[in-house]
Amino acid sequence: MSAHSAGFGVYKCGGGSRCITFVPITIATMRNLLRRSFCAGKAWHKKTTSINSPVAGVRHQELLEIGTMKMNYFVFGTNDKKKAVDFYDKFFDGCGLMKVHDEGRMALWANDDLMFAVAEPFDGNPASNGNGTMLGFNVGSAIEVDRLYKKALELGATSEGEPGERSGRHSAYFRDLDKNKICLFG
Image (cartoon, rainbow, N blue to C red):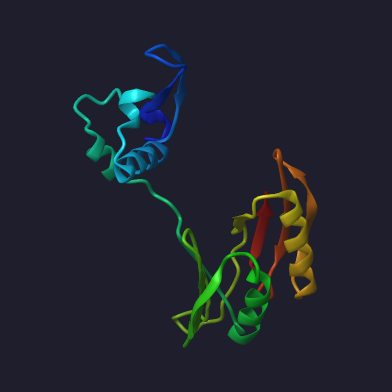
């Protein structure tokens, strides 16, 4: 079941008890709204918003516990860890990802939402990039797409598609030093 198909939503109200429109939201959004209301000690949902759930008997606490799958880390294989670490140290500089581990065969950068690593393969065989495999970074804006694409090329990456509009998003593509493909979009 997709997050949208669960049928959760909120009614935006225009004062008093008159509700204007129903806005569907994801389970994750509902959980965050409820978490904020519990943490703030406010019963906002009783005063300005009503929660619509087609699931009979679902209590607010149960909504907080519904699982949502998210990607939280990604590892690229490398055949030259030193060069890869140097590339990503410079690439991630100013992007909110900080290196939190660098020893042995792996280096790892992280923030609150993502962990990214480069690693020499555990099995000792050479690292290889996947044909059709690509990692996408939502960098928030077209300006940031352009800036990071240019930065990647200056660091030795190869272009796989200059910045431009694709599928309604401003995006650009490049391959890192190990030929791993990355999409930047905003």
